[in-house]
Image 1 (cartoon, rainbow, N blue to C red):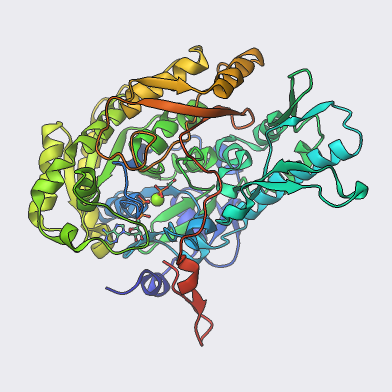
Image 2 (cartoon, rainbow, N blue to C red):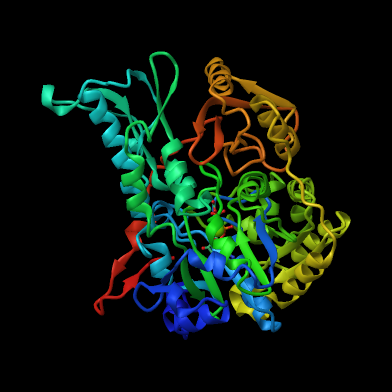
Amino acid sequence: MATDLEISRNAALRPLTSLAADMGIGDHLVEPYGRYAAKISLDAIDELADRPRARYVVVSSLTPTPLGEGKTTTTVGLGQGFAHLGQRAVIAIRQSSMGPTFGIKGGAAGGGYSQVVPMESVNLHLTGDLHAVTSAHNLLAAMLDNHLHKGNALDIDPFAITWRRVLDVNDRDLRQIVTGLGGRSDGLPRQTGFDITAASEVMAVLALARSLPDLRARLGRIVVAYDRGGAPVTAEQLRAAGAMCVQLREALKPNLMQTTEQTPVLVHCGPFGNIAHGNSSVVADLIGIRGGDYLITEAGFGADMGAERFCNIKCRVSGLVPDAAVVVATVRALKAHSGRHRVVAGRPLPEEMLAENPDDVYAGAANLRRQLANIRAHGITPVVAVNAFPSDFDSEKQAIVDIAAEEGARAAVSTHVAKGGKGAAELAEAVAEACAEPSEFRFLYPDELPLAEKIETVARRMYGADGIELSPQARRQLADYERCGFGRLPVCIAKTHLSLSADPSRKGAPTGWLLPVREVRASVGAGFIYPICGDMRTMPGLSSHPAAEHIDIDEAGQVVGLS
Ligand SMILES: Nc1ncnc2c1ncn2[C@@H]1O[C@H](COP(=O)(O)OP(=O)(O)O)[C@@H](O)[C@H]1O
Ligand SMILES: O=COP(=O)(O)O
Ligand SMILES: [Mg+2]
């Protein structure tokens, strides 16, 4: 099969105004950025409000291997599958971070004949939204340090500063740094560090804002530090929120693109369903929900991660509720969950893993069963998408279908990477049936539940933990946040995406463990409390041979090696 880049480059593309018109979006709302991407004015939310509401489908997965199990490809493939059946579908995904693009995992534009194109745009700069987030985040950091340098009128406790800096790159050497070195005119020395841009609270604010005024208000509520009396200090108090909002004004508009088969895609906000909330933007969905018969949106990593945040954070803000969920499963992931095989990023699958072995697939079933239960815990009907790889045997794919049947869930083998929308037609039919069933969507916990109990509820119900273990620091921080009036916020738990537990090496559905909560941050602008569990890092590092080593420009000036 041709490479992703070759397929992407050879795709026939439609003018974006024509795609927009099919969604009911008039030319006056389309702001082209070149030929292959356009910003959509937020006026579209009101202008489309009277159009029929689409069926809303969230795409999740079982706990993935480090390679990813195909949620993005399946999201794109399913949208094309509906189009293949004559249904009008809109896809909503996140923009790739250049961290993974040049790091371990590669891009996030889908794959094969189910890609968002041009994939170079999605996987590089697109329309500059991630750079805008980086600039706004770091402007706030600079104004915070400047406030300290200029006399600290807000009496900020220099040892209670929670705001770091961000950059869209994997760079472990920036995790812990000292700023302000030099002399008296070079600022005040203090220890801080960088996170990757996708983990910025500004990114979450952009993804959860419902309008420009809401964005401005949320930015003002961002807490960057605490004063010596323990009171929170906000971006508004530093007078930074207005300038930040100006920097983000264009970035708040979602980006319209298309797939290899000309299905419309709204690409907006950043990835990472482990150290961030892992979902595309509310405004993109508020537009997309009126743009066709189906809106299909991807939630990062497994159902215990992105889908849980989709339900308990994103839907709380958008007011939209899903009609069905797709849980992507693969032969390789289930074999890994059997505990008999190990998948390492950057390395080919072990030979023995590629041998036909439906028993090993079946032995990993516990994880898929738990993730199906996680979807159902929110009152949503799941459909299992067996994302077929060329190396899979029919007996192995059938094992996944059998597991789904035992759990009373529909399943469809999907070949959307190899065959595009035609390969996802059966999946689209199964999803349409699931959407037609009555569903009673529900949050996992009420707003008024105390924060510690919200964390415990997610740990027990989603991860299968026996409970949580709060460090003394985490206990103090939760008490502070309750005292500051943040207690009604939902929780966005940062833990490894490679296990239901906090230990990436534990596969399947681990039991008999406690969720270790190391520290808790308050993302008050985004509107969630952010417990950090286990050895989670908010700035990834590069591997021994990062993807960057194989990315280049050829003699014709074309990009090569991007995947
Ligand atoms: N059916 C498939 N056949 C071949 N490669 C696939 C298939 N599904 C996914 N991939 C590849 O696996 C990687 C992860 O896919 P992606 O859709 O990004 O997963 P996720 O969104 O779950 O992380 C990508 O490089 C993608 O091209
Ligand atoms: O947030 C993570 O997204 P993927 O699972 O698509 O890599
Ligand atoms: Mg993805």
